[in-house]
Figure (cartoon, helix red, strand yellow):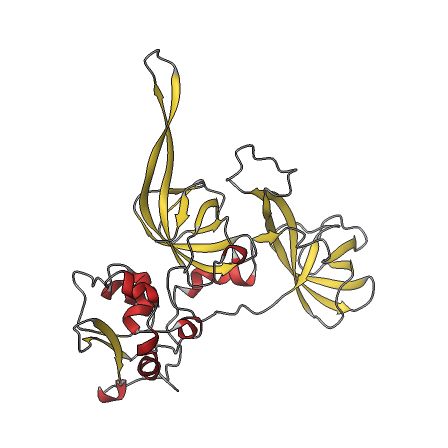
Length: 346
């Protein structure tokens, strides 16, 4: 398999423009080499070598297409910190076959960009539905006799189901997710509605196609009933991507924290009010900035709101994008991250 080192040779002339703007800064304790082990992630490895891990493509001398479709790093590979003729730092992969090794089994799992077990639920069962995302989906029109709500093993009658699809996921649309850029927060204004919370209810199997078709409920996370919607289940696709900053200026805000809590920290999943329409893509790294207003009293002892200047608190890693919303993982955090905090190009 072609390894990343072959890509580096072809890409020296295509270094990202941002490399010329900001010199690469190595981490204070950057190692001379790192042996990749199972459980490593690209983000963790890049943080070992760089103070600003989103400059990972630049130290590898990657071009644009290699960022989107990277050659992969595998357990056992040796990443070596080197320098070019001008003294600028770069990374290369040393052929791991030069080092004697004994493996009890074949290891072929490529190193992921961020922990796959954390983001997998948000890929296989998204918890955000775009505007009009469920209107044309298959719908439960009736339940089996003597059942108001359905559980495991019960039958549902579904209209507009594709007869070629066997496995389905069941959803119910929740409350609208509003763009915090609008201060009045009016859910009846279509410009403000970015999407809807999606309640993932369970899975079902189509046992007899038709209109209505007969479905058997396989798993029920919550009660399932008439009017709930179904979409074909797809196996989660873990996309290979490299951490990098956006080419354009992104200025957005956090609109929700997964789990229904108001504050988040490192390892939490958040939704932000920017998506593919705004130029966001998988692998983008954004800076977190605290958005705070405090209440003080003026000279007449009246309460007044004071907007505190934004303060950088961490980084998020975008791993899934919709048209106007994206999912991101908080990879660095100093203090609590809250709804309405800023996310911006670092």
